[in-house]
Image 1 (spheres, rainbow, N blue to C red):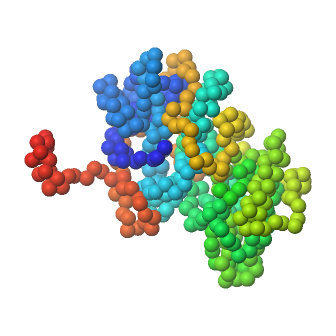
Image 2: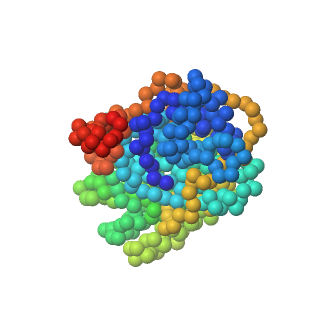
Length: 459
């Protein structure tokens, strides 16, 4: 679905409270009863809740379900998008939204800007969007799992990607710098580069091939396998070469570290094609039962692409998982799979996400499909829970966001007087084009007022 931010400027503080109440109720209900929404929102009058429900439903942020046995609403992907954007806005990580620059099977990519005018990338995970028919066929699998909703799984995917991206970045791998994560969204550095699949010719295919294989081996030495290492998830960035005799400068720029990767460039001043790795929700540990399969598949994808696109075939066989596994943790190299688990993304979360992605047929965003088979807003949430416990918005904001050192979360609950409107972004300070202004509604011009008045409009 397309991210439409036009209604953001019109939402009141009461609307945000009601929308948060629907999200809270979705934890235990596929269809949140209207009475429960009123109870959680805790507005002064039920009439105000109904007014907000009407406004949210008109904007497509909540929706009714067909043939429902009781009056209630469910949260749509649009509603979850707005909640995440509001949190990122309050954290000053996102100030305006620009054009969509990418789409995968289970995510959408947008250019955004912060208050300082710096362009970033907003990745919105949408597990279950195109595979909800498969989800419906596996209804028995979801029925017994309260954690199996599209909302929870999309959030797990975002948490996993942010955790691995931060760990890889801190250890010298060429990945976008993570900025913030909230719910099912991740904000990261904007990399001015092209996907490898869009490049028809490179000056040194052998050098680029060796660098990509070394990246696979470097990940394995630190206990990780990408799982979807192909031309869709590798960006090629052009930058002025520094030469291998300047490793300190390379580390300063964050390009590599001596124990992870070294540049293949030997002559200073030349243009260097630097690969940047993206897309990490399917990343797994070398201890995984299918680690050998995914490692060999990553290697085979690069070999096949270079043979077809650049006519390059390596004389050396491999690399092979059996050899790479022997180097894991050798020489005191830290294991990033263990480090990420220590940050809060547990093995239980990883197993739930992996099982869900397997059930719905999701491997990664790399192998994009031409035709979409469903709409994520129609994906089923977990079955209703009979629990009568009701949390307040304050308790919910504290218990569900699980903030980390760099992870975006609401610093406080939604107070009655929260400011829901966005200020105008000055396009003079932004290089990206097509940024949409999240400002207050603009007053009609005198000419437009006169025209409407002449036509009988009630002004």
